[in-house]
Length: 149
Image (cartoon, rainbow, N blue to C red; front, side, top):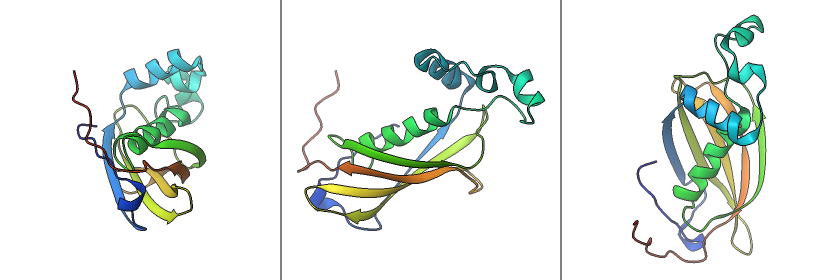
């Protein structure tokens, strides 16, 4: 994600969207397997995954969920967001080399700075890889980002 934005609770409105495009790399899957300790052969062994009916090894669902977390923190609402809850439905696999779109949409503004966002990760052709919702606490006010060192 090259740009970082931040919206305060007051800046957000229902229907507001943000979209981030990322390419899934084999190295992303390997790094997530190492960091999480999840070495399921569906994720790390292409031959095993093909024998199980997939075209290649598949990304961990929680790797893609972490991309939602990153989009919440850097895009909508952005810097200072507190992540409270996530509900996800995994629909299709994502494979190394796939370009994926992470889309966040403000569904509802609740009390005390809480916001419900619809979350979707899809292939470029629109097929959903996962979808769900997140509840966050939006930053109380927009602050200028600190300079990056």
